Every structure is written in structure tokens, then in C-alpha cells.
Amino acid sequence: MKKVIIKLALALGILSTALPTLATIQQPTQCPSLEEIQSALLLGAVSIDHGIYAAASTLYTIDSQTNETYQWGFGIVGIRASSESSALRKAKKALKNLNALDSTPQYIAEQDGWGCRYLVSNKLDYLAAAITPIPN
Image (cartoon, rainbow, N blue to C red; front, top):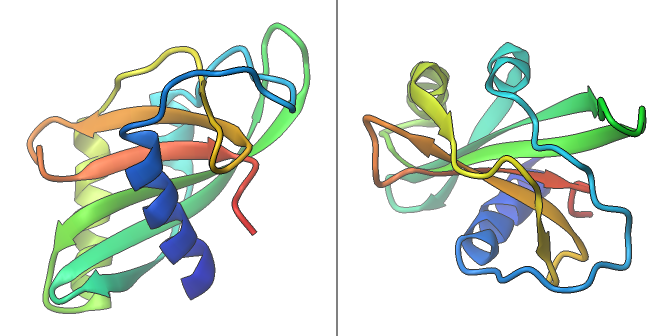
């Protein structure tokens, strides 16, 4: 689980600077909705630096245009906390203030996958994103 969260954290950093290019896998036509993300269970939090944490979840969506099912990893990075449990509580609170920045997934060449960015309106130092497929 820790490896998945760390890889999601790294992918979130990549996603924040990624430019769309040609993809080798099929692009989902839509990003996970706020409701889908907010209803997913956050699986845990892990320290990525001194006092900085990332929290992650997994969710499945059905693309309304293609009926394809996608497994997404969702993560929030940049949570300042004193422990994993504190970071997880803060991440759960942050989900209430989540806003979508992308409606269409953007290609991430480094991950050979698709990503969607989200903003936590009251925590501008947080990075949040959904990525499919989930990094190995």
C-alpha cells in the first residue's frame, strides 16, 4: 500500500506539469466525478517528507459514453500533519472542498496513463489527482 501511495504522489507531481500527447491506451472520456471521489474510501496515508503526507484511494468508474470500466487511483499530496492518522483525517476533510480542474483526462507520458487534476479550495498547497491505470 505504501508503494502505491508513494507512486501516486510522484505521479501527482508529474501530472502537475504534464502536457497532453498521443496515448498508447484508450483515453477515458471523462474524469471521475467529485461525488465518485468523495464516496470512495481513503485507504491510508504515508509520510513522503518530514511532516508532509499523501493519502490515497481506489475507485471504479463507468464511462457514460463508452460503458468502459476504469480503475482510478486518487491521491492528495501536501498534507501537513504529525502522524498518518492525522493526515488521513485532514484528507477526509479536504474531500469536502474538492473542485475539478479537468473534465477530460490528460495523458501522462511518464505513466503511460491518464490523469485528472483537482483543487482543494481551502488548501492551495495540496495537489490532488486521479490516475488510470494505477501505477504498479
